[in-house]
Image 1 (tube, rainbow, N blue to C red):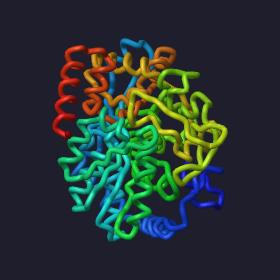
Image 2: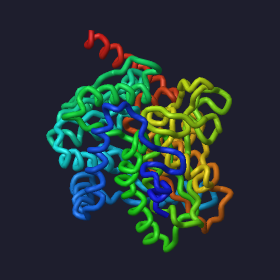
Image 3: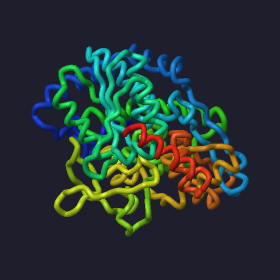
Length: 419
């Protein structure tokens, strides 16, 4: 199944979702980007250059690892993990940004901007900009700047200017709004490296295309390791780029169940979560350039979101997933903050893995469902990022007093230096 065949004659739409809803001033820039992207997709040398770049610079292909200890402890399905945390910069984000970097070179633009929540996309974009020699500015909500300080440090030292956004909830959606404003003001020389498969067309298709390398690799690797396809594939879903990436390896296989895992935050009914589809709290709307399911009130104003994972607290969901969910092709579940903490402890103690808090949401659902499956069945989880970026948040969440004291002291020192 090709995810890009859902338009039914309307390019950029997946069923009724997607599209381009932008100020007229940006239409010429979007058309320029779309024309360049079409050329890149039609040029087989572009994909070869992209794959070679990731192999030589980022370390692809990333391996698939059998979690024998966890599988035995749970007593059900055999659990395998696609290790995209082993990419350069520590997550799947490098796949997208290196592809957009090559595209940006073709556009002839010398400045890139990006939004980031967990900081991994900002880190990856700053890395790409250093590699290609672009000027770089990263917009990040002030709340996320505080809780993802390690990635801010690396972005700044890679030469990027990091802007702490003080508007709104001061998280990911607010960073995207600021990026859009910058793009409008500087579209002649600037490319917006949008980090997830959301936003106006062609971004959902473009980001999904670059991230499809995850699923293409995983399918071949798992067949080589086990001789069969997985019964279920799990991936966390904020905007949805890592999930749509790995799912593309298995969309045509009716016997493979695809499960997207959203941020349950403080739980259903709390209004402090980002489970758009799992909790059925979202409704269809238009925001930030595209049409999809958003967490919004009756007037169309965006609700507050919450997650222990900075990269999952986005208000909307990939428009491709909106369509696939309605068609019954992807199931959505949610993991609460407390469940994420428990799953993280289990992964660390049984397998020596430290998945990012975002990725751990996928582990929660897989761990919950694996015991009811047969021992000859196979689960594949996309570990889209590693948890070293989350050290301060994890230390606080796991109630480690020694680390809390250390964090407070470092935060005070940082504030004094800034003042």
